[in-house]
Image 1 (cartoon, helix red, strand yellow):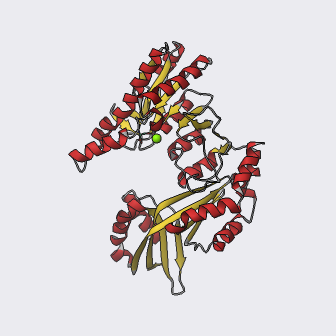
Image 2: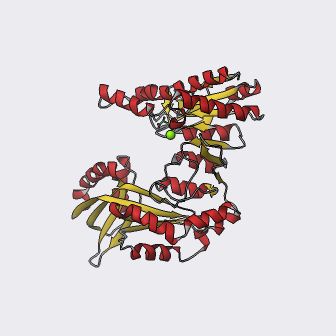
Image 3: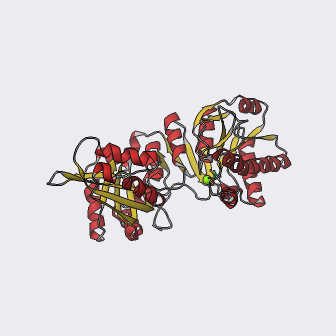
Length: 407
Ligand code: ASP
Ligand code: MG
């Protein structure tokens, strides 16, 4: 059971969560609960560091950031003790979460869950501080923002749990963001692959890395509300029935920028040089398009998250001379909208229907990108919300999801 920051924000909420954990334990299950830092704690810890230093040491950042989850954990243990339960909290390192050494964005490399297993064998409720681990050098590390989801999934895999339940302030994963498309409905099931595409393309319900971990280790996830008892959304290994629904959901992002470099040479190695310059600066490049014009020169465009635009442009400037780039231009007013569905694999015509619907709304597509189960369009930011609503209607997602829920 993983509880997000908003679910443990104040004393009343901690008591509520302790109740959920207690009920699960009383039903006879062994319970491991992972908790996030309370409310905006991690944000305030980041600000505290910024007040002191403009370039804080990453190892010390981890020392600082890891405290938020420890607070939640200890308080949760106390709340469970008061309900008469035997509960015990563990930091990430005590829980045996071993990571690489990249401070503030460490990756889990192994789980040595012996201590947790012993505690479970002693009939204790196990509480684990999310978002943190220990490097081979025995230093405290953190897993990057939203990392408690990954802690929970990794522990579920390491302990061979029946399910990893992610408790949050929404009731599940919706066909689209309900704040943008009010007709959006909760999905009963999604495949790991579909959720991976949704998370990568802007759905913020689960951290991307946790879904990757769940897919790689075949961990069933159940995303549900901390405050309401209803079933949420199950994210499981794909079943043949899932392909019946052609489109499962729509994800969007409004914080994209586009960079275009024109007049580069059309020869092997040029795109590699451009991507290397970006990778060296840790810029996350997404959609990439290259076009060759009649005179043999090429244009290359790519999208980056808005807050990485400045670094991306610096990277391109650094290549201007060597690659003989004629022009570097950018647009910081972009967004993207993605349709995701396992059934797309075997159904032609989805792109045609999608582009037709967007054309009817006079929305201009600047770039297009696809995977076997996703179609993404890069469009002006001001059109993003309208695009989400029109696609939700064109693909009848409210009804489609409702139909699936009844299967
Ligand atoms: N507290 C950390 C964050 O805000 C980790 C988490 O909540 O998952 O990013
Ligand atoms: Mg979170």
